[in-house]
Image 1 (spheres, one colour):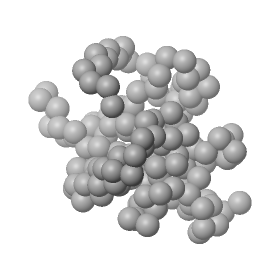
Image 2: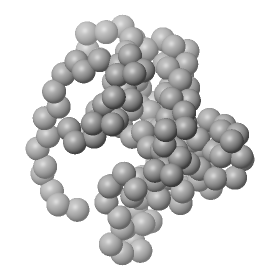
Image 3: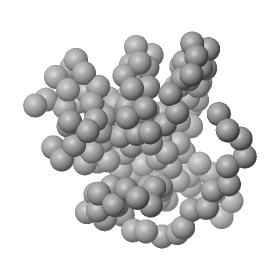
Length: 151
């Protein structure tokens, strides 16, 4: 199995949306929603402080992705890398693809001289927690959320 990690292109948007839906993210309720989601991804791609990496199988199929944000902190001289999404298609999990994506993230963070990499994982995602711990990530905080609107 040949997996290549690369930056996303506009033609990858439909496959990226499918991966996000697999993760449980909102699906479009109407055509205009799908257009809005595409526009959000394009805006993300055009922002110098953000990028999306994809894991491509045999140069034909996207089987995983990670979105990256580079955030300044008020008490740090360097930015942190924040990973809002990391997804590997369920059929391709436990084959080293997630690890390969994360190794690329670490390399990028080092190139950009980030002081840390931060991500969140929902409480119920115990398998994901083990995955991050195996990559030597530590649980360093709790995350609190307040929902303001319903989509």
